[in-house]
Image 1 (cartoon, each protein chain N blue to C red):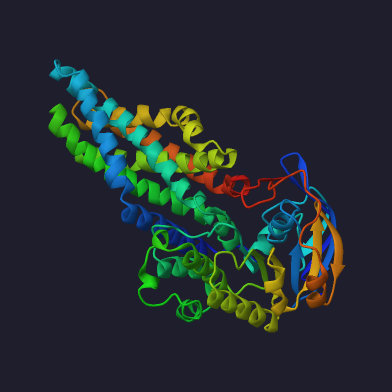
Image 2: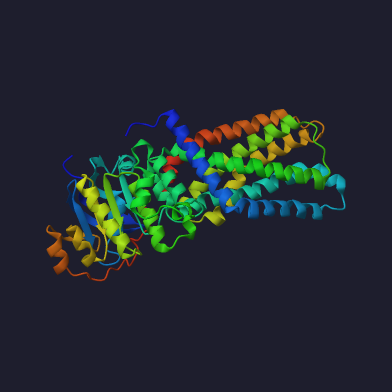
Length: 245
Length: 230
């Protein structure tokens, strides 16, 4: 497999409006890629497109070798997407949520106890209903439920949001470990200073298009501007945005 | 990705059903909201027809099934609300679970809740409406077949409505006309079970079983496309 992600003139619609307006992007296996850009730039939509949740309206795309036009179900089984929402069930405990998603992943799931331990979700917290967790604990549980799937492509939207320093370090460690093990990681975040420790390749997304693509992420993140031109779509490309074919 | 085997589909359907039932037992929405709602509807019917005990006995099967269908709307809406609440619906898509298993699991969980509700309401009907059950076998078979049919159609239309983003208001408008045959068949079967002459309950049971089978197959085949839109 030459590329983990390959997009060519990729267009994705939210309703009638193009959230991605002709994206060209190649991501190699094992890379850590940072998508940066203003709110509504299309970062979340790009992550959802790569997850197989948004259809391609036009253009071409392949994720982990699967064609995004006809093989999105195959893509989904091999990726993990951390969105703005937790993806967990409030009335189940942390351990029950983990067990459910691990079993849903089939035989390829990681050891649930080990993952809960890494994210400091053991003991009483493991037996607490997700609906009673703090925002940070809930975010950690959401990340844990992705880790148990052992994805080949990690798609992380603001992975540090709501986390304390220790949990942020743990997430960074998980990302580095995943990349070292051969998985590809694509993050979207506004915390550019924070993300320097991962030394990512930086891809700037503005107005649904890739405006700049720079290797050597540490230098790029230092010099790159966090604020791009205002986008007419506002936050339409957020978690709640509905894709259209 | 190879197609899911029958055993894997069954395993995943059981996983989904177990998850949904555990959430309902834990949240107690069914016990604290849906059951009281259904009992209240039955009581209101009793109040409305209170002066005519014979009318209550005559119309008890129809009133029972109207109540079940109204309560089923709440159970079906709830089943999809828990998946949509915090993004779990997307996670289900990403899990790679076969849509047939998701459909089967959700329908199984809804049917299980409806059967429990029917048992409670049947007891209420016997006590409040003073009816006597003469054919328990027919009563049980019709109750299970009707629950299966309503659950299958409800799961299908619940996913459709969730995709349209107007689930609270649109579901009754779409689903109630579709399940009208269940209302008719189950009412006739219960009339027979309650001793009404000439109701031919076992023949109506065939209609209920056929409805459940058709919507079960149709739902399983079309559920994948519906999930894409949800």
